[in-house]
Length: 183
Image (cartoon, rainbow, N blue to C red):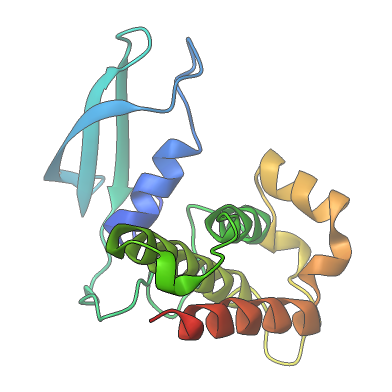
C-alpha cells in the first residue's frame, strides 16, 4: 500500500480524527510522533493507544519533498490537492469550522472568544481552499476522482450543488468576510 502524502501536521491530525478506532469508534488518542523511513521515503509516524479502549493505533504518512513554512494564516498544505481527505470531506470540514455560535455584540466578547472565532473561521477558509484545489482549470465542479472516501461521496450525493465552483467560491468569500469583521 502506497503511503499517502502528509502536507501538514494539521492535515494529518484531521485525517486521524476522521478515522476513529476500529474497535470502539473513539477518535482521540495520545499520539507520539517520529520521522521514520517507510517504503524508501521519509515519513511521519503517529502512534499511541486509543483513549476509549487502549487499542494500539498507528498512522504513517509520506513527507513532502519540500516543506511549506506556516504563515500567519492556517493552511493545510501546498498547491496540490490533498491525498488524505477528498473534496467532499474538505467541504464537511469547512462546515464544521464555520459552525460557530452566533457572535452577537463583538464588543462584549472575551479575548478568548474572539481568538476561537478567528481560529474557526480561518479553518473554514483554509478548508474551502482545499476543496477548490480539486477543481481543474475551467471546470465547474470537482471530477469523480476527487471523491474516494465513503464520507466524501455521501457529502457529494447529499449536497451536489454545494460543490459547484460558483457556490464554493461564494462560500469561501463569505467565511473570509466574516473573518475580516473580527477585531
